Length: 301
Image (tube, rainbow, N blue to C red; front, side, top):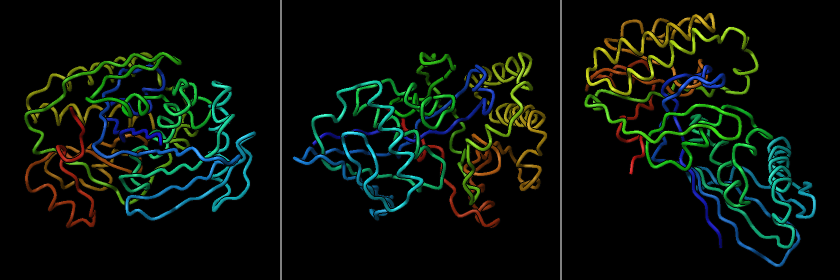
C-alpha cells in the first residue's frame, strides 16, 4: 500500500497577477486530500473518490496499458483523470506499466470550497508517479502552480512563478491580530479556469505587478491590524480596477466594520474578513454559514 497526502491552499495576495510573475503570499490549509494505491494482480486501475463524509462521489476503471476508460460514474471527470494519468506516464514511462490495482482518494474538505481538490490531486499523482508536479499541472488544469507549492509545504510561502522551476520561499507569517481574521465561504464555487480565460492578460503590466509586490511585502511585516486592513483594501482596489469589478465588500458587506478581501478568483469560494470576535456573528446573520477562524484553517508545523 502506498499513501500520499497534500494540503489544501488559500491565496492571500496576488490573485490573477501571480500568473504574470507577481510575488504571492499563500498558505497551506490544515485539511487536504489523501491518495492510496494498493497493488493487485490485475491489468486495470480501479478508482474510487470519497468526499469528507466518506461517501463515494466518483468511480472509474481504466486500462493500465493506455489509461483508456473502461467505465465511470461521470464521463467528464473520468476523461480529465485519464488525461492526467497519461501525462504522468509521458514523464515516467514506467508508471503503472507493470501493475494494476485500486486507488482511493479522500478529501478532508468540501469539494465545492475551492481549497484545492484539483491541486491536491495533481500533487498526489505527481508524488505517486515520481514526476514534476508543475509540468503535470501545465499539461492538465493549468494555472500558476502556487497551489502545488502549498500542497507539500509545512508553512506559509511566498511564491513567484517561473515556468517549471518557481521560486518558493518558506516564511513565517503569524499576524498578532490573527484572532480577528476569519475565512468566510461565499456559498458558491468559482471556476479559476473560467476566470483565467476571461481576463485580458495585457492589462497585468509591470506597474500592477510592482503595486501587488509592494502590498505583499508590507503585509508580511505588518503587526497592526488597522494598517493590515488598509493594505487589504488597497489590494482589492488594484485587482478590482484590473477586472473592472466591484470589490466584494462594496458589493455585499458595505456595513462591515473591518476589511474584506477576495481570495483567488473573484466571485466565489472564500473571502478573508479582518474584524474582531463579533465577526462570525455578522456573517452568520447575513446567511453565510461557513466562517472559519484563521488558526483553524491554516496549517503550520
